[in-house]
Length: 142
Image (cartoon, rainbow, N blue to C red; front, side, top):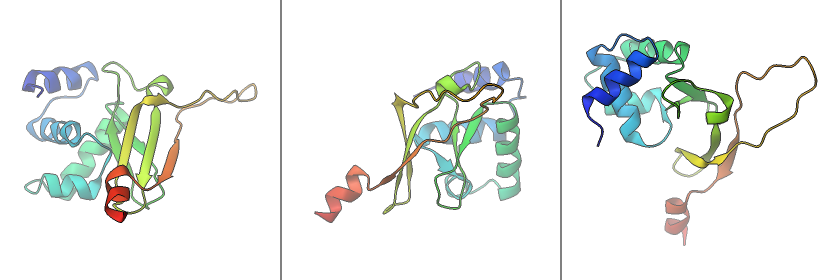
């Protein structure tokens, strides 16, 4: 379990003022150990209003504390960037969307393959999503 100083340092390295709510959102995302949606955070932080969570996520995205993931569910998912100092293409990894439980899982050890783009093109983000049935849902189906 990470202590409060870990979250304080993480935000300060990204030039984000560490307010109580921001620390709460960051800690909840970290403890979820998977990509979370706005609705997930609302349930996890039932004392924090939706607009405050939204503003916090927007700020975190602007300062590269987190990145967003489009899993095809119609709801963006958010995940803390792997690196404490930046959120680069090299930190991106493969995500898996379970079509049964509708959770998005992060496979940190599986990196996105490099794609050679034509000259002049600049990559700012990559979304690599695999869809299917997760191990727990597959075990229930047997």
